[in-house]
Length: 80
Image (cartoon, rainbow, N blue to C red; front, side, top):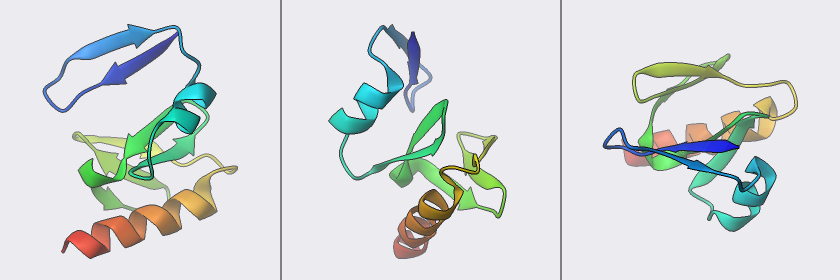
């Protein structure tokens, strides 16, 4: 079961696997951890350890750290 969290705070539960969501979603969405996919447009900051989004810090997993950090840093920098 996967929980989808929206900007307005609504949470939807779905039986679609996170790997399936990863394939369905467009390039705005970045997998940062085995349990998390984030919308790059809503990332407030990127640190060496993870991302800040919606007032919370989500740590990168080792598997996704390098690619996710690079993609999200470009996205955040491009908005400034």
